[in-house]
Amino acid sequence: MIATLGEERILGPVESMASEPTVEIRPGIFRPDWSVATRAAARRALHGRIAARAGLLDRWRHRLEADEDAVWRTTLQLYGACGQPPEFGDIAVASGISPERVGTILRKLQSHDLVMLDQACQQIRLAYPFTESVTGQRVKLNGHTLHAVCAIDALGVADMYGADTAISSPCIHCGKTIYVKTAGKGSAVQTFSPSGVVIWYDFAYDGSAASSCCPAIAFFCSDQHLRHWLEAQTARREGISLTMDEALEVGRAIFGPVLER
Image 1 (cartoon, rainbow, N blue to C red):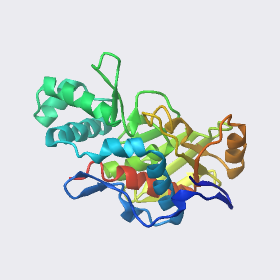
Image 2 (image 1 turned 30 degrees about the vertical axis):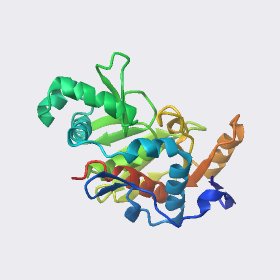
Image 3 (image 1 turned 120 degrees about the vertical axis):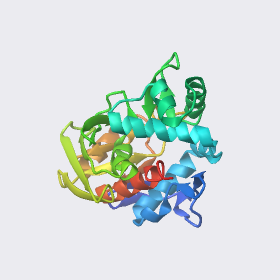
């Protein structure tokens, strides 16, 4: 793994970048999109993510069937448009797939760690990058305020939906509010504050990103506060520290392809 903090680096097997692992999620559309990861740290983050989360890559490796892909895309399109998870019936109407089949497909998508349903499997609780849980990462999109699963998910929203966003999130160490605005439909950072913001991209994975790595993929108001947080962890965290521009590239690489046709 790689742990990067300021100028301090601990290098491991992930340092070798001879290949760029990716998954074809639909014909001609690959995830992550390595073409938008132009910065070295962003590419290290993506390689570290793939190496550490082999189980997740295995879940994504098998391309979804056409109707499964249609339900996934429709779910996310409705979520972003309405600011809340869609009902199964709404997905059925928008996709042209029967409600019964929609329910079966959503359970299949849950096994791929793409969505999460409630215990009765009747309601959507999470569809990356959004969740109904209050995470602290608030994203304003199309007039709605939604909760992103983690900091990287929040940064990937704008490119995914082709609409610029405003993000607010507390520093996970001190609680100070961090603000980010995107430009160019998510292709760049317009403004952010405070000026020393960094993002910790955690590599942990155990069955579900939302319950393993995502709580630790967070904004920090300064490199110093990230250091303090890492030092306070009971178990050593494996991951990489990213600047705002580097983190945006990671978010774009992961989420930009999701709604592409």
